[in-house]
Length: 115
Image 1 (tube, helix red, strand yellow):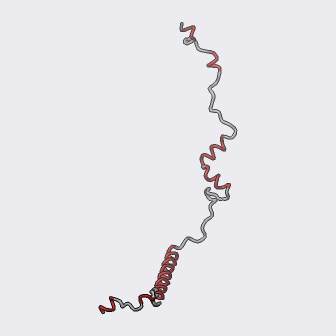
Image 2 (image 1 turned 120 degrees about the vertical axis):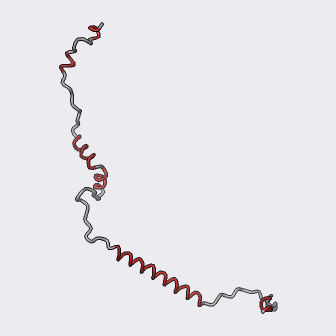
Image 3 (image 1 turned 90 degrees about the vertical axis):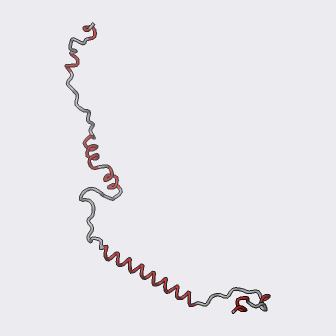
């Protein structure tokens, strides 16, 4: 039975074929390089933005946070002064007199009577 199955005798076809290596297509190296760099850089390069090493433009002058903060503080102070000024102007205006019916001109105020 073992001879019929071919278990004991070596198969000449198996020994004749050399072991195959991995199958690599012609564009495999490009795919490997893209995988190492990542696709984000390639996609952004297409739109004119580059994230690759050395391709990013250097800032000529670092941002001065102290100057920016002072500018913002002065802006807030200026707005606050303007609000205060507008409040003072609103207070100096006399209050608007409400409409009263001439029908009640002869009626005396209860508050005025108590005073």
